[in-house]
Image (cartoon, rainbow, N blue to C red):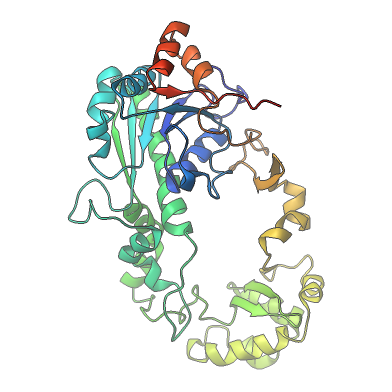
Length: 391
């Protein structure tokens, strides 16, 4: 089966089947495809409307075949693909894949070295395993949601970064790669249970440690890293924009004071925690006398741990982000470049999202199906090939 990934990409030669869903599953696929893996996206015929809304970057760089898993021939198609794959993953509720005929036992029965990834919120077992939920619910159970917010106010929802992506899709991608490495040594695949409650919980490791030594308060917005400190927060500028300051270490804090010409009271009381609210008001008052552009100039070349708070539409214009090529243009849309980099460069060049069923025929032929078999699957309605648009 062919792939456009460079042969030196870290995961070149790895083949992964994605039973397409939404959110964390597509994000895992993006991470894997960006590293050069051949990710074959299995779509339902006609696609999933929710899977296309806001998912173009996450579904980039992979082929799409449309398969009807309600038909036995469709199930058999997936099982045959598993024979030549390193891994497969799904994002169904526990037990659904088994009922469809593409669970771990069925798939690994065709390929004992296959790594089987399962992406859920609550995990494969436990009293909540069958409950519906979303990112906000999963991070609520980990303590992460409770910890994020302002003093005296309710928790702040951190987009769906902590559960879906950091604690979900990235955890799944990591688990699949670990499983593939292990399978290449042992000759035996494993089932990867990637649960967002586990992944988001892992992201909270430092804060569990801080709590254990009495250095983390359950009161939001009172600690050093949650906006409680006057040297680690965001501040509004004169032109109603925002900047970030994170000058924790004494030498960086001293430079902050020098650059903003802060008074001796601020200079001498960095770690006087009971005065942080008062000192924050003083810093905020100084910042508010400057525009964001003026502050950029004040802190140019500085070690005061300063950065402007950019809107998404500004990111590509910033000198550092532009110099690194942090965003790439894919089919007219700005998207994050593949990360991490290897030898200083992104490992692949992303390609646009494919419409469901775009590559059905070619992908199956490359996987060893005969032309007659593909035609029979199409005639049975088990697979669908998206026909090219006519003028």
